[in-house]
Length: 486
Image 1 (tube, one colour):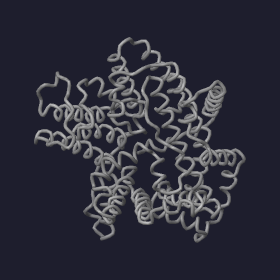
Image 2 (image 1 turned 60 degrees about the vertical axis):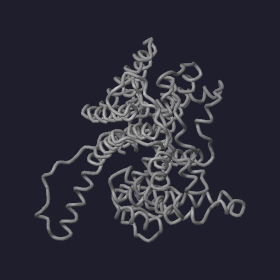
Image 3 (image 1 turned 135 degrees about the vertical axis):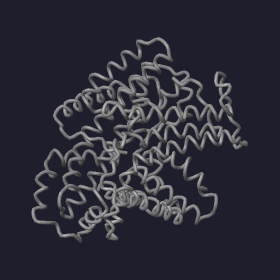
Image 4 (image 1 turned 90 degrees about the horizontal axis):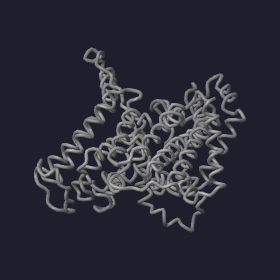
């Protein structure tokens, strides 16, 4: 089930809100949220729920074992472990069990097919095809497994570090992991950010109104901007070849699609949380207005970039062990960040580009350029780097990505008939949508900031955009969510 669907907007969400506010007690509301989230998540495949349930149980037990140093005293409030204090063998085993279970399940479901395909490719390269496993099973990737795995695993790590108390209530913890608001495509919500809200939170008319506004604006970003830009990108990338102009147009359209597709989903998720009293952090802060790739990663998918920083980059040593080690840590972090997005050499290439440029920027120290090079020029260079990297993110495979880059550079001869795609991608509707998306990406503030002071005119704009989005949604057959596959 997706947010931008009639089933969710006209049936699931109204029923969820009605029953939620009809229940008088917090434990009942959390139980309802968990059940609704399991229905939401299992809509495509109920077996996915079993996997998430198993992950949740492991991390819940691991947190309590660490907090109580064993299996006794669970009926008492969990103590907060001393930061940087000594840990017992039992606590260490609990943490390792949590991390190993989470990463093993993620690796199996996300990377089995990738490993299987590369194994066969290697055999064929050496002429050993007879040693293949042609009849081996293929694994279906559960929706959102990368998101809820990181979210749930960070809880047991934070308990071990002494950053948060373990949650005694299984009802509350299961609600935290399963909340449908951000379950399948983020933002990645850390337990420490919502622990107090799970125990006690307020429900106000102002919160609910802002939640509706954020959901309306997020839906409009998705339907009115991301979908038409996505159609342009798909037409170009799925063609046998493209002219230089078409290649640039399609790549830029994809950059706009992924921004408004993902940030629009995040705004809808934050809005849904507010409707039920939860306050989630900002996840996108106008990333294409960044003047360096370092700044870009402070603005793009903030919940992931901070997760990678706190749970991977800093544990690797961060910038505390010399310049060479810092460059290595940046590269490894971004390579694994690319692999997190998908099991493909393309995602590794995307991560390598970002990691390499981040290391280069740290060496060059781009803050020295402040006042010397106009910010608008640095924004343009940063966007160009991001744009080139997006080619690997979108192309079907590595050869297709390299061919597309050659087309962008004017080094690849477009096949006969490639010009025919112009009859689709240069229609007035697509040009207008592309132009509006570009203006919004490079000059508009975040909807998070825009809705903080919700006036009557702003509310009217939100309602008009919601109405227009619903009208367009009824006529659009093209309505993917990019990050559902991650």
